[in-house]
Image (cartoon, rainbow, N blue to C red; front, side):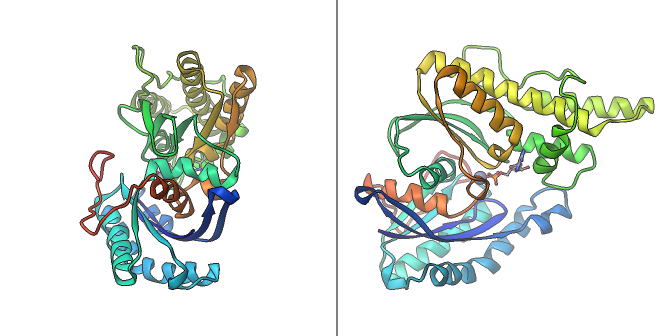
Length: 339
Ligand code: KG4
Ligand code: ZN
């Protein structure tokens, strides 16, 4: 099956073409194009929704043509059109959804709506052709932090989530307070590698009740307060130590929750997905968790971690196999409810 997929939920416009055939064990990305708006939003220190929508509108048509051309397929070869329909910035989602609907309608193709969170996890199917549910997963991105139990490709239970900021948002806001350009996650990763993780004690980002939920706003505030206090006292800030100590609090929070989840649910496969899964310290901590607890760890490559359309196409294949098609009344949803 040849799938043409679109992604426009935040600040990356993406189009991809995939060949998927479970019976033949084929999960192949034929093309995957991403037009990043990061440079535009960096001027404002974060994503400006209206600018994002306009940039998606400008990019999507040529990305579609480019993805088909690079894949060496024609419109006639396409069996399925896939698009991210939730969650995300509503104006941004509308661009991808309307483009996909128009393409599917004009060319008489079936349409599948994909949840962006499932898409991040589906990136792992592309990297690991033998990976199959059931497994546990965590999506760590700029907008989401969720612990998920996948019973099958489309049957998912959210067993824990952040109650406030997402982990990537926390990385970006701490980075901004330290004067690093947006998005600061990757630079924080580099600084943390040369800092002392024991230099400052920051609180963990977990809620102490019987859930597996996270709360990153307290950790974020603690780091920002530390930076402001140092500035007021005229003390020199060692950005490397702050980055390392903050990152340690993040990795400890995630691994503590993973140990609890393993105790409760007893999984033996775990997928770490989303933009923050590119973090080298988080990867190391999760791999150590896996080794200790006998859990096989799957972390998609950096090129598949961030927002892209290949991951959306991969999930769409399994949605279609489960009979989950959208019709032309499809509307996007900013949250995971609806659609
Ligand atoms: O998944 P993604 O591309 O977009 C969303 O769906 O949000 O994730 C982007 C997030 C940003 O917050 C960025 O700072 C963070 O991923 N990120 C990182 C790293 N690389 C990207 N955070 C920590 N360490 C990294 N190496
Ligand atoms: Zn994402």
